[in-house]
Length: 140
Image (cartoon, rainbow, N blue to C red; front, side, top):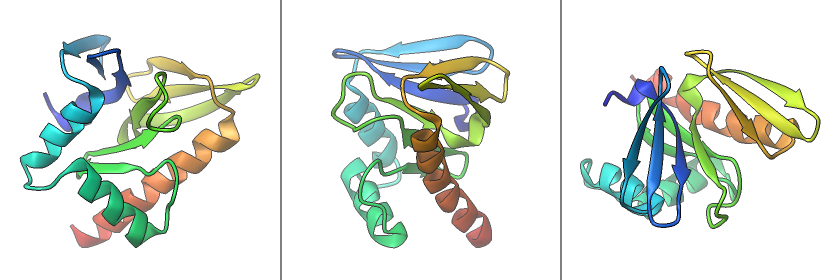
């Protein structure tokens, strides 16, 4: 699985669904936190450490984006403890459209996701993810 192919990760009861480009899905029998932490451990870090560092460096206190690789920065759609929270890869987003009190997210493969959040909030979370993306582009 290539990081750039990941569109979003969706939290299940005791599982995680990874949505990939071209309508592919992977179901993993681990919690979202375990999946993210395992991803971080291959770089000898933890999810808590990355979120704390991101919070300090970018002065973000809530809905902290998660930097996992140069092609994978995940932005939360809600509080991380909410059951319907989805982590969207901001590298895969090409547009967001207001849909009443919801937001339609359009991905690079032109698939769509309806998020039960107003566009102003999702845009704010997305902009925070872009801050990380832009700062890494200057480094690399």
